[in-house]
Image (cartoon, rainbow, N blue to C red; front, side, top):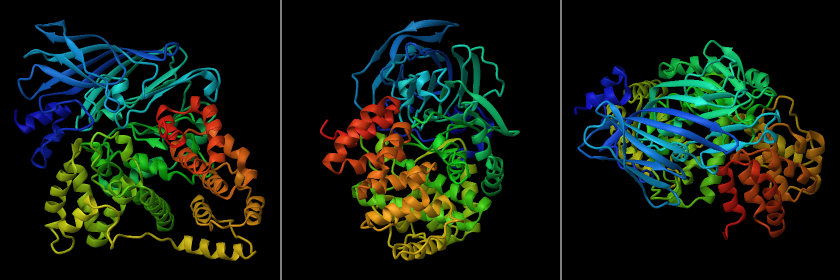
Length: 616
């Protein structure tokens, strides 16, 4: 079948035909998926699921359109802990049962599901149920929610956890559209990464459509006692009642962010952009599920100081959701571009001073990660082998990838580089691409157009070599220079002038205090600024991490409550890592963790058990 015809079927949209001359879709082998997209792909999914909180189970069917590229009579999908009841193919105008086999369980990949599809069937239907321990779902009891009256369930499919709740070709090289029917207990609201209704109808019957083609890791679901509050005509917040108004106020700038990004990089192509505030156990800051970003409550700070996270998840609507990494070793194509666009959004709305502070903080975080990571794990186009793709998530794909783009902007000039990026988003819209494809595109559309500015050798150094090139940008902030001067005066007994400090300045101050700071100065700082009791989750995290290092016991009770009530892995795992460095703290941390783990997401449990129980 010709490339153009494949793209029409693949995306279900004639608008993608124009991109066929730019790059063929990436059907390359993915080390983390059993799918063989070069044989048979699944460009459309119909889900029909019942949500059973008592059994902690989803049960129903997944029905796929089949796109055949060869004469293969089997299709290969990914599963993990799924019970496959029956498989059927649509043939001769009716559903006919067909045979299937499940491979041996693999610690990282789950189980391969191979289904006989004959030579002419057009659809495949799989009857299945999930396990209560599905790695991509978290089931919360009413007591684990804010309202204490209703249970809550949500998914986290990235990177390869969609296979734990849908039998699917779980590779980002696949792009598919989907429709879904969801049956839930009455009184709860069901939402998905699709066209969510703003109605408060809670009859337990919900229907969804996602007409734009997305990779499987962006299929998302949540069910809970949710309310809705609109911010604008195309932006709303879904949340439990205790936080819905605060979140809507906190993120009131979201429509302006959309407009600013469109002005730089072209139209927002997903219709609505809504946000879902999840319970505190959500393991990430945010997840860019299209049309419905999942967001941690820890960024509802009351002063709009942490909305760069919203800018980041929104930026994914261009980089990541629109143009996607074809495999997890290419994660920098998602996160490096998104971190760059996020910073540009923040600069457009809030000025260069704030954007530069955030860039400098990211650089500090990157340097900390590079100090602890093996050199091979500081490469952008990382060689994961069959290691779990969770291992690629560090500041390297985010911030090193971002700095690579900052470097290109500096070399070619902002106007030229913005024009290149806008064309890039247009040309690869609704496609998944590899690092090799990006390099070819970069050479043809930027390097060759402006010769003798950046060489391909320099590009390869950024992408394929560990660490940072010698001429990499090293972001600094004048605001942080002023903070450091104040710090030196304060350490000599002077006073801080913090009336106009933002979260960023406080983080820079705390993170750069000398490690030999005296107990007296720790007490003085806490007494003057009440840092142990800070309601800002980011500031509290930085302070509590320092308190562990300095054995500042007045913060110990807050540290316990923090670990017991927050499940965002970025905020808890560095604390457990620091505690694990001494035998007494490790013993204490294990006791706290055993209390906290029932409220942690399975992904958070996995990461922190590796820190606290390395022997097992």
